Length: 203
Image 1 (tube, rainbow, N blue to C red):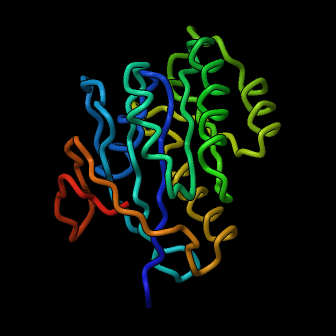
Image 2 (image 1 turned 90 degrees about the vertical axis):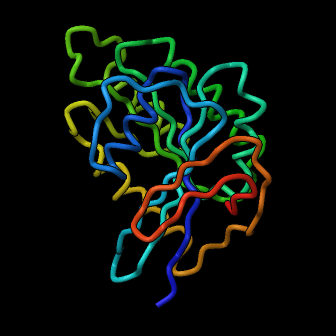
């Protein structure tokens, strides 16, 4: 049976925990200290949804403003986007609107949207309520999830639900156009049977 490939891009401001969420899901690990992502890094995870094998090609992107023009090139061919904010920072939540607006100006094809509030373990410092974030996600046609990458809480549910949403939207055939982009950065690939690639990564 042919594996269905889906490209997933993870967006959000620097420091919201994008890399931590991805590595928690793909590698089942958590790094206390992560360096800021430069450009983007590719992670691959395979799973089965309703007896169909799926390969999620998850792009971890830079959150710094100076890399925005670089990050935008990763939008092409996107099937799904996860926009992450830090529940202890109102500013990172407000920035979600900017990420969504930019994404929708570039990606015209149908895609699955998911808004994620990270760092729910820091309850005493919380600035964004669950209801506020949920209502916003609903207003843009996105699902909403909360998680703690550090405590491994809610992370797997995000990607499992995303995979099912992709299956509902695209069925057994992904309609994404195959594109090859020559990257000027290194791309790290994780996943069983997958070898790291650099420069000229097929996305």
